[in-house]
Amino acid sequence: MKRFKSTGQAQRFLSAQDGINNLFHLRREHVTASECRAAGAWAFEVWSDVSGVTARA
Image 1: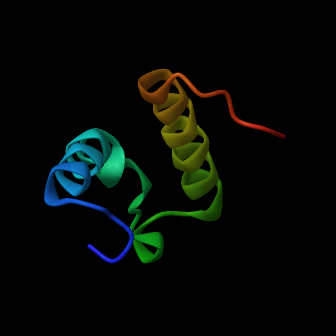
Image 2 (image 1 turned 45 degrees about the vertical axis):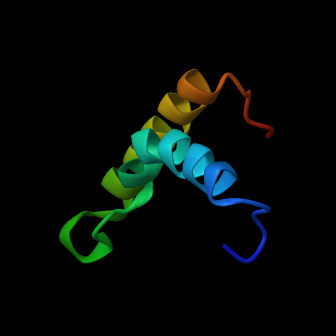
C-alpha cells in the first residue's frame, strides 16, 4: 500500500495484474535457455494483448 492512495486503488491494480502475474514466473532450473527465452517472448506477447500496450524493442 505504500504508493496507493486508497485500498480501492490498490485492489483495482491487483485485480488487473492478477491475469498476467503467473506468466512471468518461470522455474529457470527446470527448462533450457532456449525454452526460457521462448516462454518469455510468449509471456510478453500475451501481456501486450491483455494490456493493449505494445512492447518497445
